[in-house]
Length: 133
Image (cartoon, rainbow, N blue to C red; front, side):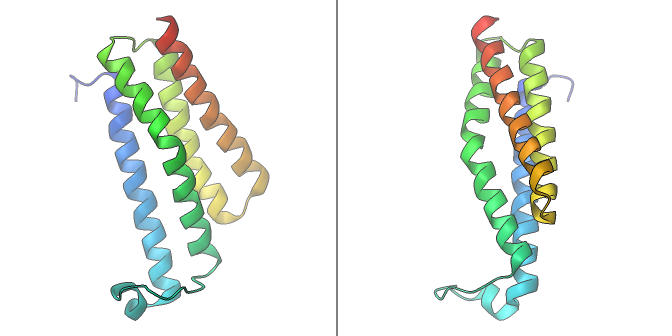
């Protein structure tokens, strides 16, 4: 992967993060709802348990900020503006988002909130890096 700059590596990291979120959320849903519900049309609502609910909300939360991350990483790469701030922002966003899902799933309120804010700071660093490079 030597030909990939930090922005492209960040996009790969985003893909891995989304796949891990979906897999965790799906596994928790399967464990709480059972196979019959999971393979069916899922027309009826179902209380899928605390962990499955948290993982579903964490996934939705990730997907709310992923477009901003995606846009900034693509612009940084295409414009050749992958400097230290962009690289730091990418690393911070990915690490904080990975930590957030663990903290949120475990019900750790303040650590989860702190990680959410750190991820936001990562996006801000990326934006500043793209605009100032």
